[in-house]
Image (tube, rainbow, N blue to C red; front, side, top):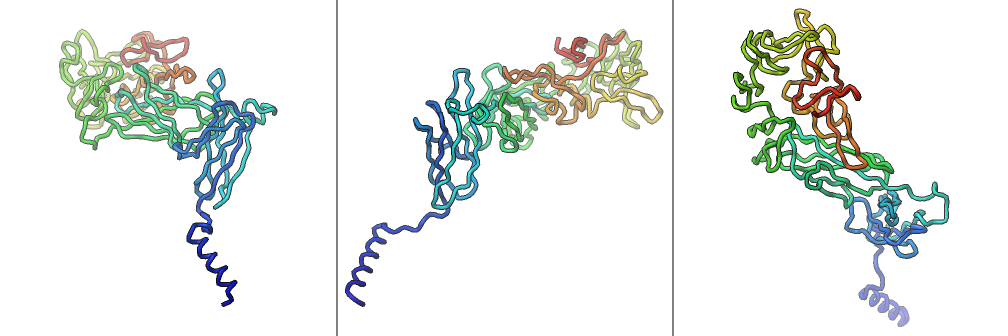
Length: 402
């Protein structure tokens, strides 16, 4: 080998040994972005990696290195405006291996038409709808892939998570609470405030307190917590019932007084005979029993569906008697009524109230509504709202809290 060739080879090897020649990292690349007209506090991070958040420089530029090659989504924010809003966008780019993906967006101060600027980010207001009529203490919420997480303030049942770039089919809202199984649901975020409720099932496998018996939890509608099941019921013993009534320890509803007594049992009271059940001009009392059973629960057997308790079904039995029955059971009906909600779907999720509506929700102010149903005023009893603590408001044609 000629001396010149030998020297060139030695030099090449020396450079390789010192890192002068490196194999390109084709598995990773970088993103170089710019928010034109960005204000003072913009930032960006890859979806799923909020720890890589970087601030936007004075000229609106930012760079994130070490991203996996391929399609990457980034949450890009302009500065917060005086009214608390931000412009933001979920930007999808293709990161080249050992290369740089570049893109540009327009912030609030960019000299372009408003339609060309990034959209305003939205806020997610979240609450939970626990199974079994329970309430929860300090539920924990998060939006998967983002830095957004939180718990409601003391005395509140909902928390605001934001701001989030508007997107459909991207985000998952998660919720956790002691005594219940963690849960998640997909959410779509618009450039506004969006209210969502997350159904929670009782955690019967944890070995700890279940459902309503967890620390700080409780029950809606003055129900009692059955620690064994974690569900809320009307009674756990005779002491939970009015004088003269006993607690049916199977159905956990108070019994109706004996037939012919001075008072009659309310809807869902345990009964053996229809003469025990309260009725009225519009809705004769009826003791609903399963085939072959000796006892059942009080309901009504009216001449028309409109006289049924709110969101009860109007069905005929095998003898052609039309009567009102809950969709699943009295227990689930009483437990679902009045639960916090942001949507009708949240009230109907477990089938207890298939025609329920979420009344009174105000996501803009972080206030959940209540699961309720359509009602009617009757001659006797005065209305079809049979859950204690509710009455029929004819102004909105719904059962509302007293």
